[in-house]
Length: 232
Image 1 (tube, rainbow, N blue to C red):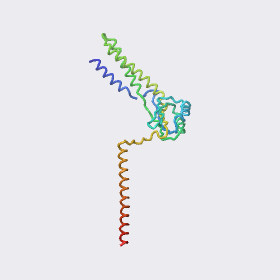
Image 2 (image 1 turned 60 degrees about the horizontal axis):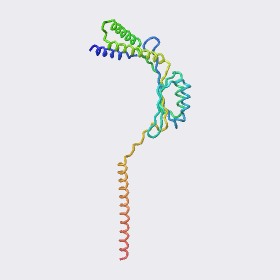
Image 3 (image 1 turned 120 degrees about the vertical axis):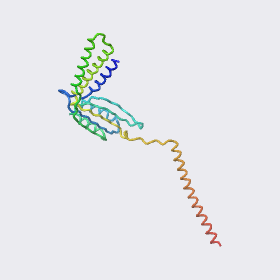
Image 4 (image 1 turned 90 degrees about the vertical axis):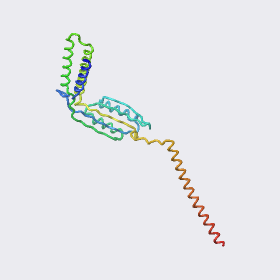
């Protein structure tokens, strides 16, 4: 029971700790951009694209390639680079083909409340010290407290690294796709529908042929009647 209550308490504290980098030397603005370019062939611009990435000192955060059911390919990637190089990086990508979408924003980001996280960490450590000083400490609770402290320390280090670089860095998401990749595929017609369509076409042709033969028969009948009348 005690272990369960402690877990719920720690879980609540951990959720409330994920706030924002308020504190000396942290904060600033977060920049991000998106650009989509259509090219004739992905392989044709691959070397040029890699040269641009290297020249801009862009660090890849994610990278993937896809091919749709029509064989059209697409490269999708996210890069982190200095804000001063972001627009030039996007301009270089734009020159590779036809730009279908492009956006860039640089907005203030308060980051994470490191001071609040530090207070929670200190509180965890004091609880653990008192727990260890008491006789007959429950090893499960000690292990749980230690795990929470290590998790919070790792979280703070990650936030510090993120906040320290957020003021100077930009994240750019790139899509380089072959022309027609983003176009929707035509809906295939089932064989049953094809049979119905063919039957309707044949019926239509039959009706037209019937009307044509009826007209021809009518004209022939009138011609014969006229000839008999003239003969008499």
